[in-house]
Amino acid sequence: MRADSVDVYTGNANRELAGKIARYLGRELGKADVFAFANENIFVKILDNAREKDVFIVQPTSRPVSSSIMELLIMIDAFKRASAGRITAVIPYYGYGRSDKKDQPRVPITARLVADMLQVAGANRILTMDLHQGQLQGFFNVPVDELTAVHMLSNYIRQNGTENLAVVTDLGFAKRARAFAELLDAPLAIVEKRREGNDDHAEVLNVIGDVKGKRVVIVDDEIDTGGTLIETVRAIEKAGAIEVTACATHGVFSGPAIERISASSVREVVVTDSIPMPVGVSSPKIKRLSCAPLFGEAIKRIHLGESVGALFGKEASMAEEMVFWDGEHAGLPSPGSNGGGQNSKRRAK
Image 1 (cartoon, rainbow, N blue to C red):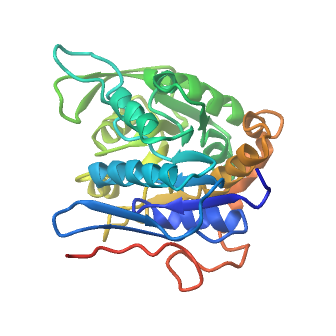
Image 2: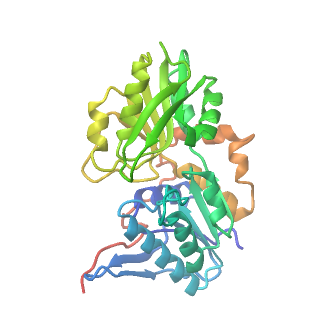
Image 3: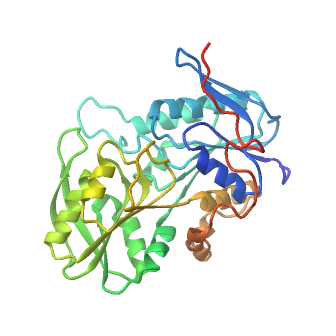
């Protein structure tokens, strides 16, 4: 493939992030119409020549989840029929990732279903970040590159000092949390929790490890309704922690999450911009770091046939330093401006 044959497109799930990724690569977003008719049927038309191009479609499958998934599937199909050379689905947040096993009678494995749909639609490769469980990669029969925000988040925490620090997580995120703790040279503690039923509530039963008199960082893959986070904060403070900060790759922030965080004693909640904030809500306690340079660098390496894993090996410092990227250094138009980006709209017919 030619060096100039890489193009970045997006649906409507996170246009801001897609625009930043394009700017990091020194390009404008590819042009496409992506909208829904009055009957809610989604229509996609690619407005550029895509023949033999290396196409990257940026679309987290976040709220509205069903529309985001359908937009991604239809865009993949459109590029396949436009004879794109290779189609990579860039999914910063993989929705339905928690439905990865049959843990009750007569329930689906929806994470596998979504993986099957992406492949049938025509995706040749998947690029994502911090899946709920790494084993989800095995649901695909195409290459999967899974990035991690651990280095970026830990570097942000390091700026505030690591003295008297402890890292806390649950068993599901323990492996990546151990790497997080090692980067900060801090001890790791585990919270034991129990989830009953199919609601979003989890009961924190115990804190395994010493957090008494320490500044604690809670680390996880995502924060959804915030219920588990608040329960964890209470348990840690009861165990003697003097200050609590929370870090997560994905800030889903469903339902009362923002209100719960604002009313809690947690000092700060640090997430990436893999998912846009809910419309019209904000909190001074929430800090968002851009994962655009991480995805941009991975896209460049995939296109050129270079190592993506090197970002988290000997070149991990590159991923750590990306936390300081301001998103405007390339001087290209912002997403949605007249100078570039995607012609995205909702149209009634």
